[in-house]
Image 1 (cartoon, rainbow, N blue to C red):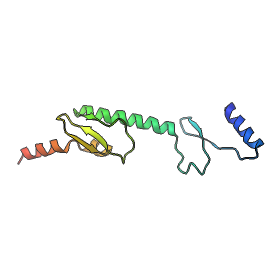
Image 2: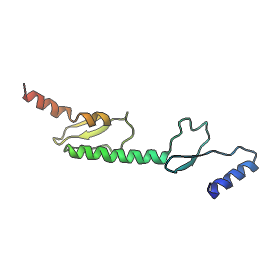
Image 3: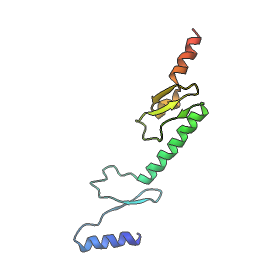
Image 4: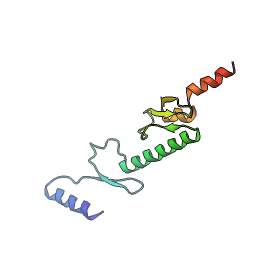
Length: 115
């Protein structure tokens, strides 16, 4: 345990309070939270890294398909992102939907040409 955490625990003991638990994720990131605050204990450093990686992956997906991810960053799987295809069509779609299907306007044009 680092020196700052030891000092904090000592000060809390002297003040007659319980020490604040220190959480540590699998990657070694540490943070202080009391259990009542952290009902769903997650490392915010790892979560931020995952969001950055997912944003990068989705930008690459759009680039491969000739489009652009217009949204600035990935929030979560339930939050729609703003996309633009190679033909300039703009739409909102969840990240997993954009991975499976691309521009619906372009798809309609392709299917209409087969009628």
